[in-house]
Length: 223
Image (cartoon, rainbow, N blue to C red):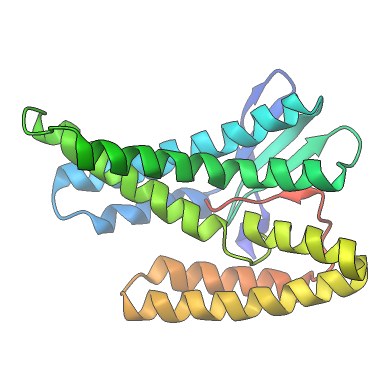
């Protein structure tokens, strides 16, 4: 499928960033959530910014452990190729959870600001921007923590299962759990008229069915 192909868009000190038209289309499709032209700009911008923060936190945690990142591939759900020796169990959990955790922090901070700060004097555009960014942070937190490979939650699940069951059994179990979670996400997408969720669920399920033993060395993130 096209989601496997990518083109390098930038290289920064040994780190190459890749993406493709599919990933760009997924980001841009969030504009349909908006009811005004301002919102149609703010939704893709907020999702893109929140995704950048997500990836940056993965990088910072990797550096904190004395490692690095060779490549970020922003396709379908995304992929990160870490440099250095394979991580220990705790390190793998922490660096995988880092991305959605920073999205969760942004969501909590945004909710606290909107609920406790007097925003009546704020320009309407600023207030709507904070509201949309908070919403996007919540969405990325929830989706990335889903226990479905290749999302962060799925990689954490597989790491834990590998410790308990071994690599082969863990890979098979993670694929089964992922299929069930993606089925639930597809149903949610249908009920809430969000075709991008249905598409991602179908594409991720296909990827897992085609390559159930894909290496767990990479961390993958929504968009």
